[in-house]
Length: 424
Ligand SMILES: *Cc1c(COP(=O)(O)O)cnc(C)c1O
Image 1 (cartoon, rainbow, N blue to C red):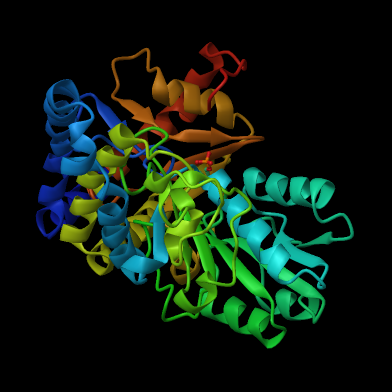
Image 2: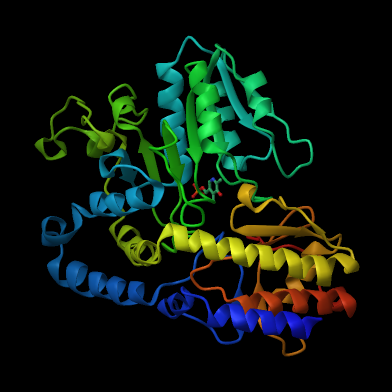
């Protein structure tokens, strides 16, 4: 059976219009990388660009490089990201972390809708999103409450559930567009419409969707969004995040952090805060030039490939991976912890097994000369297999699933410890 899958994969790879994009990235011959949903690969171009920036712009240009190269970098990067998420370039700010941007926008939205006291999210959301809401309620908005719509199956959430929970007292709805564990994907337009019936604002976290599924912020009437650039956009570890506010809402929202880069004229050094008019009012301090510049390589590659083509390949690859899992892994005690309906799924697939952690260790640290396969592990028993259509091949998917099968069939995992490192 595995031979048939290898043949099928070979054909799919031969006919893959995006196949050449994998050569844009640094590749280790003995490694299959299935963790692009946590930290994307390094684009070749980023090495040269970063080296040039450090050596010439910083090393030789020093402070003169601010005016020559750096001051417009946030806006230039924003203009590119805007194209990827279906927004206007003056609706995107690039900088700070996703968590910080979430805080700024959630605070601003709650302030604008102050008399309304209900915040809505779901119990599949990423922890940082919920922590930020908890902190805001504890420290600033003490009469507010957080209502979590519960998933019935721990994988998906019916949008209809939101029609019951969102009411006229709801000020803010905060959701991850693609859920980090199961890869369930919300219908953004539907949630926006429900919220808008009650004059509630919606804040989308796009961290697991930007660069992996098409996002149409303007066309779906999205109010606000945040997202990260180090996952499917391949921007590098801790690369600056972005935030989006639709044009007509910008003037009504005030950042809770009144900092000089959000001032109308930072270099006038006035002692009184006057926020910028547009999206840049959400800027805080000096941009992180090195990591901001490193985003460019990955974002350019994404634009060159095109989100529609990337989604098409991602759908085909994840459907193929599901077929492989059903045939090769389910007989060995695995279950699929992602939606089977591809139209409701992002670009990663979660599988579960009671020995999930040790199996993931055996994948990463083979002792039998097999290729290294890098997934990630989310407790208690989820192995996440991230598919990055820019650089993963169909053959790699067969190799990976066959390798997992072997680890379990031969009980190779029993040689590994249950102890976990700091970052998984
Ligand atoms: C990765 C991720 C984040 C990361 O936030 P940071 O501030 O960059 O650490 C936030 N939200 C979601 C949904 C994520 O997947």
